[in-house]
Length: 126
Image (cartoon, rainbow, N blue to C red; front, side, top):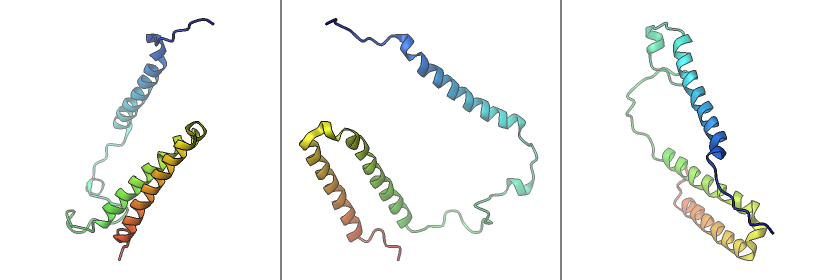
């Protein structure tokens, strides 16, 4: 059996550098192109604030319920926890019974966090 050493050569990184250059070039070209080719008409109506087709009324610093932030943060947390399950699902046979037990512990902790959120009524809008 032949002893094979795998070394990373600088030429191995060439496709990554090409992709990075193309992505950066596309971004710069798009921004510059829209600036140069886009319409230059400036009017009071175009420069006014616009939010989803609704005229802006009132103060932008008006306080609103923390529930919006809480629901968004909880969604991100639980969404990321679910994303952690994909690598496990792909390799679950290699992990064996220990990997299965670890995933049950992980799911149990996730369930406990969800029960805590429900008990605190963090998801109630009322």
